[in-house]
Each structure stands twice: as structure tokens, then as C-alpha cells.
Image (tube, rainbow, N blue to C red; front, side, top):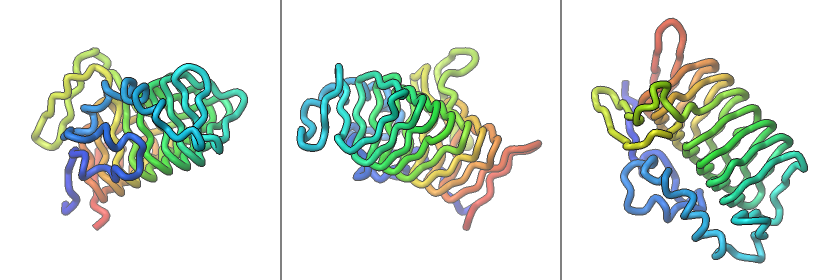
Length: 226
């Protein structure tokens, strides 16, 4: 397979496509910033341009053109950037940065996450302790599982390598332009390289190379697009 396995920040993400770009500075792996999201929002929020963003409640900053359904629930700390739509029944639990032109959909729940610009989590998604790269998309019913069943610390498995994260809660790192099929489960510590596709109803774990197609059935198969 010619596709490249990676979990480094610079190989996964276009950092100019998020308000959180400075948070990644000096870090090697994206999951290193998960414990830092809350404090970063509290620091960044008061500095945002008041001509663009409006402070709504405690530690919540929303761009003025964002569309929010009356039945959505928004808890801070939270920043939502321009052009985004938050649909009915969405539940944002806090410590969340939502980028430009995103869709947070019907009954979708977000907690301690960063959505880069143009991300769509439009239907019945749970995204916790995760980072979704530019133009990534999660199909209806697909979720991140962010705690192991035995409650031990999450380890990222990249081929023969095992990377200790020191984190109990860690969902998934999706690179730019990742497509996740409907009703898939991304198990704790999943990393998906840019421009990869996950087949519907898949159970995914470990590091999936960039430019790949992941198929989960009787046997797991990872096929290069190249």
C-alpha cells in the first residue's frame, strides 16, 4: 500500500482553516491539545472582533450570521465561527470550537471538540474529545467512542507502534476531507488520514492511512485509493 500512515499534526490538518491554529503550536500529536481546549476558548473569546462575534451568555461567542435553531442547546465555553448552521435538537456541551460554514445537525452532540472550517456533523452524531479536519464529514448516526470499556488510558496503535496518550477520554482525530459512512463507530484513539473514506457501519480503530478506503465486515480491509 502506498498510502501514508501518520498521526502528526502537520500531516493531518490545514491549520489555517481553524480559529484554534495557535493551540497546535509546539505540539506533535493533535490529541495533545484536548485538555487545553477549554482554557484556550476562555482566553480567545474576549479578543474576538465584536463587529463579527456577539457574546451570548457565559463564555459563549457566536458569529452574528450563525443560524441557530430555537431548540438547540448551547453551553460554554464555546465559539462558533461565521456561516455555520446549528440545527434543531443539537446539544453542544461545552469546550467546543466550531469553524466557518459548518453544520451541527439534528440531535448531534458535541463535547470538548474542535471542528475545522466546512465540517459537517449533520444527523444524529456524537463527537466527543475529538478533532475534525477541514471539510470532513460524518454520515448519519456515526459517532466517536471516547472512553475505553475498561476505562484504561487510550493508546494509539499505528501498525506495530503503540503511542501512549496519557488520556482517559480520546475519541478520534479526522484529517482534512475525511468521509465517515453512516452508522460507523470510531473507537477510542482512532486517527484517520486526510482524504480517506470509511465504509458505512464500520467499526474503526488505530491509524488509517491517508488516501485510503476502510472496509469493515467479516474482515477489515484497507485499500489505497492510488
